[in-house]
Length: 294
Ligand code: KIV
Image (tube, rainbow, N blue to C red):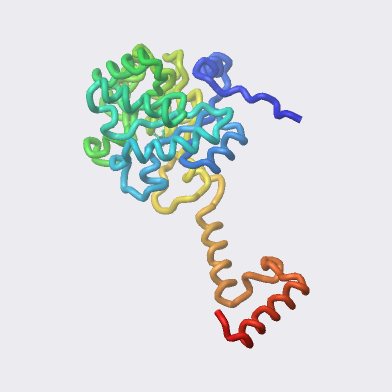
């Protein structure tokens, strides 16, 4: 029996969700098996985030992540995703260059990577120009305001943005400008829920929150945080749904113990010669010994 055809989530489909008041589910993904599970589980958007740098590649922040790193991970996610919209995050310095190079870099994620859209951080005037240029080149763009991790050296640390001194108004204006420039959705990271609620109310495009409270049109988390496959500092906005770090350590310790005490592999993990082949092997080895040949 042929499989029922799967309809991929589209940009207009996401707009329709907002219209209908249906929340959008977004998660990061960086590899084929994970993307396959998330797609099967009904996640709407798979974001190949540059959080790759911290979640998978062991960097302190996202700045070291390259175009080649991102493409390497976008490709398997796109191969696995049959229903979810795949968004590739543009890494630091891939879109801070000339408009032509930025379009070329973004286009690689669609042409070579198989993604359907890209994400860029920030809402400065040059970023808005770039959004217009990318959209003109038929590249759907997701915006990202609030805490923009690529700005870590300017911000000093990862912390809540828009909480004081009118900074919330600047973030609201940034999100509005991004919508006017043509982004199809905007990530709101680490901002007070009141600011996120105001943005969500003002924009026609969906807002996707991470540390931005419940009033956004959708939510995104870093997959490794959700499944507890990471150690150390965990932001307040993460809810862990599993403890894979502990579970994997337990499994590996059990395996190491079994190897060391000889209980693995057991008989059921072994291949056996049939009795006739056993005898033939024995004879062949005996013959070789008595013949003394090579
Ligand atoms: O890189 C990333 O994973 C992100 C999300 C946290 C929004 O930008």
